Image (tube, rainbow, N blue to C red; front, side, top):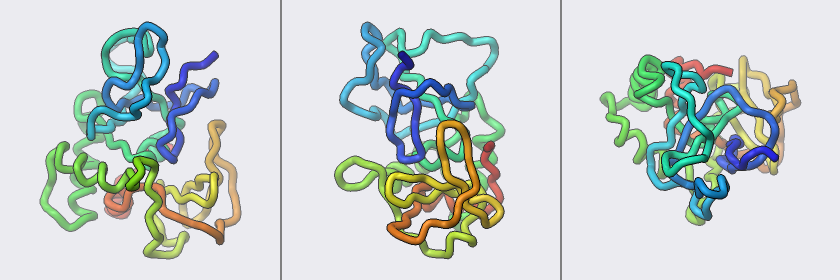
Amino acid sequence: MPLQNRVTPFGEIVSVPQRGTFMGNRGIIHDPLTRTLLKRRWTTRAWIICVCQFKNVRRDVMARQSWTELFFLDEATALSAGHRPCFYCQRQRAKAFQAAWADGNGISKQSAPDMDRVLHEERLDAEGGKRRHPLTSSIEDLPDGSMIASGDNAFLIRGGQTYLWSWDGYVPHTPPIQDVGLLTPPSTVQALRARYMPAL
């Protein structure tokens, strides 16, 4: 049985067989004795995206009292859930995101904790669930890597086209027309507009 440590674009943590291409964490949110999640879904505002291989480090997943290893289909999924690149294992990517985030939002370069404060407000609604933001432009005008939702489905935008998300990847899909909201935090969308290109 797969562990409950795979993250959807909605920020939910589920159990599926697919591994994903990126790892990340939100602090310690598991019990290492049972390798199961606790009730809380984050213990820090620093929700980060890490690479799965770094300096030959190997970890027993969810097996010790350390940060909880989470997995994402790709970087666009992680960004949609409200994560950002890690400054330790992805320093160059994190610096590129930081620069694009500042440029896209029309502000001076922010520290990681400053970005985390903004992202934390944008990722969660009043009840602690995934916040869906209203669209301020047409779907076709969203930058590559943005994700939207309609009902329980998430969609990636790339080249003005819409792709239905699943754990097995993306398939072309007609743009949704009902109950459409923006999943990717608005400040991250602005970083994408400033030409930060997530790995898909």
